[in-house]
Image (cartoon, rainbow, N blue to C red; front, side, top):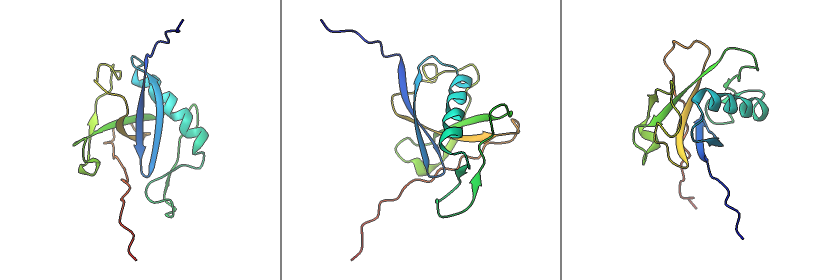
Length: 134
């Protein structure tokens, strides 16, 4: 007899600079909950901060420690088929992945905001695959 395992989650890809963080989140979880989950992962995985560009550059964005006031703003691609076309801010107030109609493996850019009123800047570095020249 097969066991029916409910699938109430969705995998989302969160991008910042050259980083991509895959998270499995509840489809009806608020974005406040998702932001806390993302911050926990960032604190564990990137204690020194996130690279803003190529890892060879020393420019880092610090990840705020637990207990410090920090808000995460999210963006969606202007063109889902061309991530280099830029990002537009996503209003996540009182929303969840289901209400925003996010699909499995949807891509979201994120910006760490200490001042909630500032305009988010979505820094996303898209890898380029170039043919090797001989």
